[in-house]
Image 1 (cartoon, helix red, strand yellow):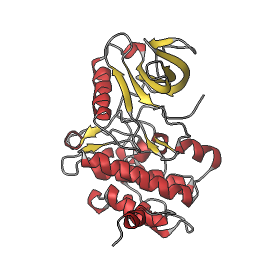
Image 2 (cartoon, one colour; image 1 turned 45 degrees about the horizontal axis):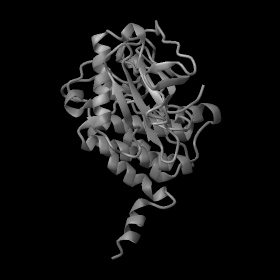
Image 3 (cartoon, one colour; image 1 turned 90 degrees about the vertical axis):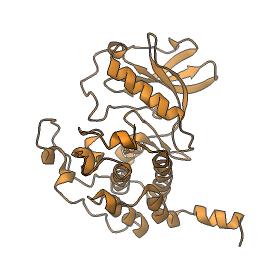
Image 4 (spheres, helix red, strand yellow; image 1 turned 30 degrees about the horizontal axis):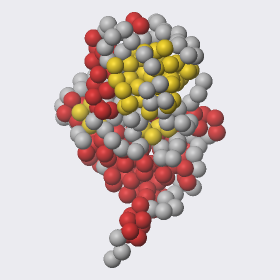
Length: 309
């Protein structure tokens, strides 16, 4: 299977039952008029993601299609429409683009830009940790995307290596559980991917609402795994009925230290992003500022050169 901008697994907090149905599209089969399947990329409990050819665009795309047994499910359709509405409102070089949406009919689906490159999770699994020269621009680019989302009063809620494509530029994908900041503040159940969830995501309360700092935490965990090859916290128990501290070790333990050898600006960004109190974490923009001096050509130097004096 090809790697790329496919959303391959459902985060916790969304339905997590094993897939019960599949379209089983083969190469050349029509997903929708003018949209031809090329290869199955993966999927979650509610959807499948196919590499496809869009005849209108004459270009390779990703088709995210609700599975047959979810086509008439109200919550699945609402989630797909919410994702389409959010993506349609965005325009950032690092965030995957929505090209078309058909959220009714026999095969509700989204047509997404295909980002040709490996997921960060794939690089870590196959080759181990990233070099700081790779991790630093990844940090700055993903932080820029989160800064943009937060400026639009949106939160991603599922920042992790599987949702980051390592390319030029890196790309942030899968906004399937993204919310407005207002809606996120009213969450009352854990939503996200367990190992990458901020403490306030694990145990949402009105006293400590979920918001932009949760995305910064997810980026911090992503960067820690990127530069060390391992997660900053032990993996929790895979049981929704387990005590929260067993399911989410980040509620009760400190992160593993960033090893010596990681450049201090990057190490500092990771450490501060994993502060247990949301207010103690940097904003996405502040995180980018911390790491940017490590880039070969920091952006502010480019700006200064363009605007002398």
